[in-house]
Image 1: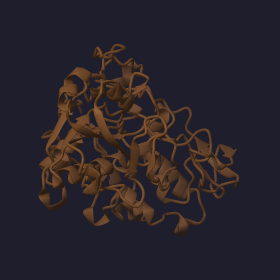
Image 2: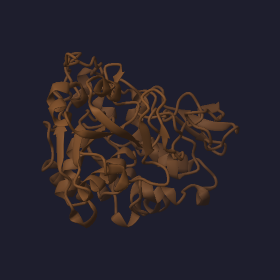
Image 3: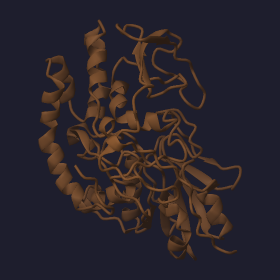
Length: 398
């Protein structure tokens, strides 16, 4: 079969003059790794292949697996992350192994009772291909899945290949750095909440900083994106998970993700997840909404079937880098200061999101946003020094 180099049509967010150093890239300019078939096909020929994939693993409108099967690549199995292979599992929903009806391939869940490929899973595999669209936030579990796949590959002498994709939040670094005492599947590494790296760059850092078990190293290769840099805004061609349904949600996720560790509903169970927030007890709100169970999106949302007083962020300008290049703490401050039951506001999960207890204590003790941000800076600057060693694309300008 003739091999096509497929150019993926991506729409770049229109950037206004207020966006500083963000580049205005022409349509079709950014080419993700998966589309550069000629670059990685020789690495897969005559090998037994496993794929780590989900619904975002696309070449134009064709799934990567369908494309590779059509090219006679010997795919043995597929590993899938949180939300499942088809991307319709709820947040935190247990994903089971099964066989895909379309391809007949076995789908092995890495978000169920097991989050790391077992030795037997890799016994008949020469190389594992990783192609998943991430959003560049520490609490988004796809980087944790990548960590454990890399570790399994290193332990079992299996090659690891990343087909890199742009990071839609890759134009800044911000937020509290994880204290490893609070390691969990939503945060394995001592990095800020927003790390500003693509998956290939992050994998290089995992290897280089010896973060894998017993400081082993993964035999890794990657196909980089063409024409991508960290000073550009990239619009995702498909939603990366059920509750990040558009670019506004993707950009607001680093700021609104804090609410997942509180009593506040963050729009789950509505048509606007990660674009609104509220609670039945919230005061000084500007509208009302009632979260409902939505199959494949949010089955058990916080405050289900209970009317919430909410704040709508539909007017937030996502075209301006000035409004995007830092985590917004004002919404967390507002919610905490406008709810009566402050003793119940923070849940233990909040510590895993933040990576420590510091932010909760700072808010409870009346620290200002300026003081909180200042407390992050030493750790952020240390991280930036580490990050710089592993960048594979031109960096953003501060």
